[in-house]
Amino acid sequence: MNPNTRKLHDLGQRLWLDNITRDLLDSGTLARYIADLSVTGLTSNPTIFERAIGSGASYDVTVQTLAARGLSEEGIFFELALQDLTRAADLFRPVFDASDGVDGWVSLEISPLLAGDTVGANRAAAQLHARAARPNLFIKSPGTPQGLPAIEQSIFDGVPINVTLLFSREHYLAAAEAYLRGIERRIDAGRSPKVQSVASLFVSRWDAAVKQEISPQFHNRLGIAVAMRCYKAHRELLASERWRRLAAAGARPQRLLWASTGTKDLAARDTLYIEALVAPDTINTIPEPTLLAFAEHGQPGAVMPADGGYAEAVLDEFRREGVDEEALAARLQREGVQAFAKSWSGLLARIRQKSSLHTAEAARDKATDKAAEHPQ
Image (cartoon, rainbow, N blue to C red; front, top):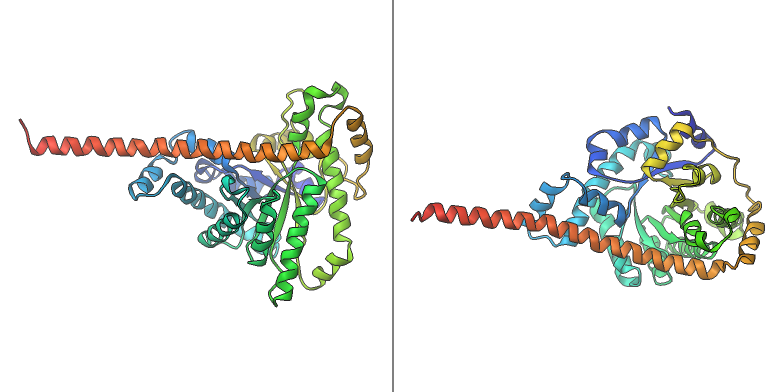
């Protein structure tokens, strides 16, 4: 067991892998990460699948087989994604069972085109979770203003949700409110309150967004301060009377998940966000290169203070630098939706291209057979 990743695990933080490819599964690499690097879960998104399906030929035969069955590009994608993620879920199932369902999860995202469609997002979440037929598969649903009612309804319906595209304390609290309302409605309806959820806060995109607008001494400090502020809000929520009532009824806390934790600034330490975001009962989902870097030379930092530490002082400094964090959070969420939508379009284009290869080959085979039947 790697001592660096094991130390985070012993401190109460869970490491998930922010990646999925068929090669990762077929080669046994994911199984090795689980055994050796204390990886206890996995997340995916449209950008990850765009890269996975677009590079190499691992998916080609399956794409062409599904295309021959008449599936749409979107239908082919979700079939591919479910094949990969159910395999991954099965690898994590022992972790899931040993932790009584707290850990050992994988995540599949609904179409980012549904970010503004409350009814469509709720319907897609229910359908995908039913198709997966795995208790340890989260459906990722965006925590946009239009997405929050869908999250509440999904929780009420018993669908485990990974709330994605959160960028601020206010975004987090809105996602937490949707989760709490869903659980409260379940209790009122006489249903089990044990529906799991995580709230994914994106960190490094803050620093990338302001790098050109601030003095060098402020580089790579904003995202961490925002995360510390969110952690304080999270701890306060868990100490509230409202949550204690739900916990007494058997509800599980919606855990904070740090996302976008790969270092984007080449001048900064490649394990910066892993070392700075050590917090008990949280999750850090890590890009594969960052995971390997941390296993090699990571140095876990001090545990994040429950009272937010120096977060507000740092945020005051950024305000003096001209950063409006509320406006920037809204912008980052919009850009996040747009980025995933762009990846989604690219993903479907890749599938269309691979499907067309099958169509062209089938047409050539048909022409060859016809020529053989009617020689000149």
